[in-house]
Amino acid sequence: MKRIGLILVVLVVGIFLTGCCCCGCGGYVTPSVQCSLTVTAGYWVWGEVWLNGEPTGVQIDYSIPSMKTVVLNVPCNQTVEVKIVDACGYQSHTETIFIACGQNYLSFNYW
Image (cartoon, rainbow, N blue to C red; front, side, top):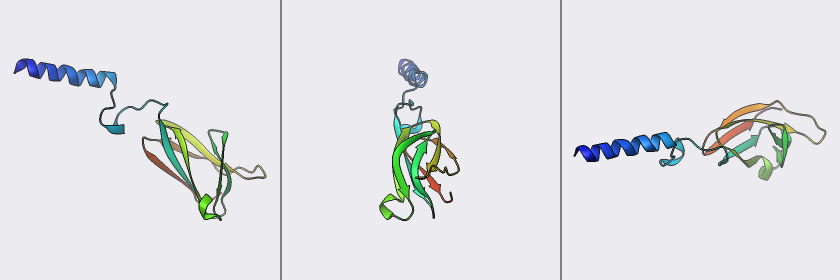
């Protein structure tokens, strides 16, 4: 009985020390893993979505139902800065969000 208990303790400590994510995404996820960020445009918000100062090539527009919400793949466990840049080059305010494992949501309710 002692031997089984010792084996279980060694296994648990080994899993803990190696950072194994064996229980879903609740544990550590490497930055190369992609998560989703859903960005929604509020009233009078349109343009290209930018992440961390770089254009994504994805357009968002409050007046077109199919473009009001866009889904982007972003690295997990990182803080991302998101802004919208319109066709004239005007930038919206910047939103900062930490990307957790799974689906993340961000709403631009104003320019």
